[in-house]
Image: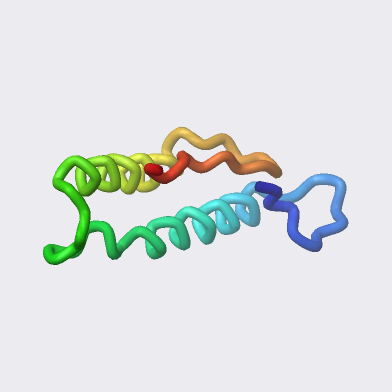
Amino acid sequence: MNLRGLRDEATIPDDYLIDRMRMHRDDALSRSDWTQLPDVALTAAKVAEWATYRQQLRDFPATWTPAETLDLPDPPA
């Protein structure tokens, strides 16, 4: 995923890239909220897979080096 957006600058400030990364990461977390509801129609194993994925998303900012591209963890199948 490209984080450049519409910016034409040769060098994009790290703060901008970090904000964009967090926006995409937060969106991925929001789209998977349903997987952790108590009455979700998933097996316990699938709920655990989604919980692991969501933890990977929460941990992602600590290991990401600001760059114009973003490779978030893949959601479970």
